[in-house]
Length: 561
Image (tube, rainbow, N blue to C red):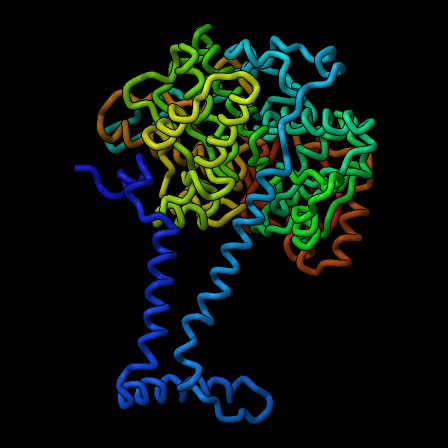
């Protein structure tokens, strides 16, 4: 009999929906508020006296002036409503903001220049659905298709070492200037922004482009680099990082890289007011806001192309037909695109991804969403904006509008039945940093994993790829321990192998930022644990504050946009 956890994994309807929980909580609190005034006087007096004395004592300790007597008996009946009001307001505001983000970035038809400059035969979505050819604004941005490389290692599951193979989809090598999965995410997003601006008279007439992320965001850096290569003026680009992450060298390198390219860069862990104002604007000059991770319809459609590209590589014999795909999950854009890509591949009659027991294994990198999904199944919701189900539904609707078949039901079925979101909190750890388990997985990779046929090594960063690699090892070790044939799993390598540095003085800008933010001075560290392939194995205790460019320049590749 399947456990509740397995039921939630395969179909979120077996979990409490968040709106059910909210409704029940609201009813309980309102009932409590109505019941208090009619409670027996002795019981009410005893309860209010006990709680009121405690609150009065706490106020007396905190307040710097004498506290007047508080009529607790009159206030207590309203206390549930006082608590529930801000909570309901907060959730309503968040939902409204997410909905605004969802609608900010929209697909556009291509320009004549895009059709002339891009090789449409390299677009896997056009190859799979010929009816869409030339109907979407699209920029390649990188070198595609990305290869599928084979790695080998030995896993000891208690009864002797066992040789296993690892297959890796090399999204990290997607571009020589800055690779990773975000490049593919931006193909339709930047293409649509370019087309939107051209319709207004040129890129310099655009409404502005805002990229959001955490302090060590890959999304902000990728947008800054590739927007410049698309001709987006630096004066119209702003990168904001209002969300904090843990102090690690890989995060610091991304922060420094963003400072080396043209464009406005918000201060460390700031920018929410600007984002709120931009999202709430209703005029034609409202900036385009690229949400964290690029989680929007154009980004999801672009990521579905990765699966269609992989399907063709399987058909050509360049990769095995996998038993599963393993990837890190942050904003859920890549995960949503992979689910949609599997549905499109099956609907269009492509053979791969049809093995019995095929699964998409997603490893959350943030403990908050992971816990929320474990309790309520929110990440696969089809009602909350910017969740996997909602964005898949929106993407399918957008494709139907331009002539594609409707993949909605098939894609949602794949999501419910074949997407397994890991609940392993030991792998997840903190957001933006290595967990102990991911650190051990990286050390295992450094010592025991060998590339076959001279493939380039991977950058196992603590933010994303080391955690998905830890999940991959866990699955393969389970097979070895059970003495069954190891599953053929394909890992999506999402962290760019190139750490770019532009032509501007990033160190001077960094020092200026530090003068305005003492938190940045404490957060920015260099040395210690990094997944960069060129780094020597170091103890994490060696991390130290950023003091000189010589600490990091050897890890960076000069890029001219």
